[in-house]
Length: 331
Length: 258
Image: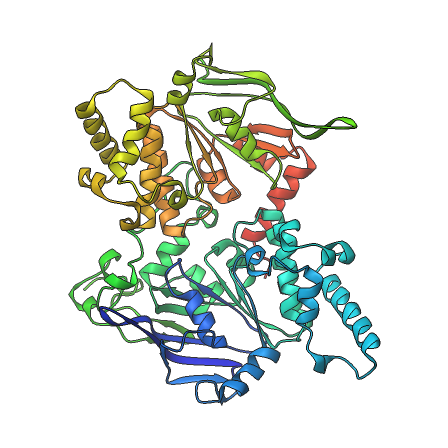
């Protein structure tokens, strides 16, 4: 049974122009111990998916789904307090841009100690409990590879380097021993050496703690080094999902191919200074969404049929939504 | 062929005067390199290694404490000539464009400040430059919020190009961009470079792009010039430990042992 199973998640935002579907029938499932990557450009709704999983959305936005189960329990129909209990103890989120997501007015010690729940401590006198908290905080930092915990804990967020802040945010997310870690763009703007460190850390946690990871990013290099399976989002629609190796070897959706081709690192045969292949234009804004397949206006293979949303088709465990996938010739 | 830009022994140090005498805070050790027309040079290094400072010294935002920069073999004393010849592209194209001005007036500013063109010539120049970067002349009446990310990046490039520079300096031009916009920008810059024979210096963490478009690489570590040379030489036979670490990290990301 998958840990998290989402089918046809739709998020509608009420705008002056009427309801706009910011997410349109998203399918996503995460098995236990799986590292799944959620790939998409900015504006594709990655962060909205993350927020709807943890329920951090505005009440005025309508979230509907055929299925949104956490270990078999329906997340949408449960009460707020039940849902909060689940997100508190079993799902953790590392937010984008840790240096700004942390509270600038409190030291890192205050912040991590606050995130240790009372229920995780043994009963004892208040000084014993305080001592325990401190030890736990230091332990957590060691686990994510911050050696000098005293210095780190005594500093404010602006005083630590970005990679330390990232590791600290990870430590804070892991305090509650979650089953699922959602990392929202954890390697953004990092230099390669730090990036590799953070990725190794995540991979290690995935092996040793049996932690499932939802890796949200558009850094294909990091994703291909890390993920087992990948789901590609475009403009609020899932375009393709399947095993990482399969997708990389033979993408079926034109968008996935464009995305993979845009990274020069994957293409050894590319002569230096040759033009990179890319789709024209940019991702449309929510006010100007095209009907049907939203890639339509930018897609090199688009035809008349593309004004209707294609059904999701399946080859083994490789899902894609396209009328004219790449393994078929144009008809 | 004569080098377009010659930098010799450029150094910078920041000193603090306190009661206990002068204290040196940061130092960019003497850096020397040459750039030919049509060549691309990448600057690599960790955060805080002085990459951005080097870019600032080149465009003249910061003043070097020693060394000199020669353009076509001539020293850059004339400020106006320097500002015209070396132009910069900033990292966040969105924040670097003034939201209250139309693109036309944004692009006109450098022309007013640096050239003697009259209003009609300026307008023609703006339209030409917009076409050059793949936009329409009508875009001069737009504001920045009406543009998509890719178009904003094009405007940032247009602003750098409008004075017919010989060298472009870019501080992490691709870091904040999405994959498809990034490829578009890379293609645009390579095309402009081919057509106009620009020297292009850029800072990047993205080694894939560095490898793809740069001819030469300069590696900085804590203000020291660690290594410099041809791109394939540095990628295949890195000399210093630091560069080796960077390249290995990058290789580890591409080739995944199953």
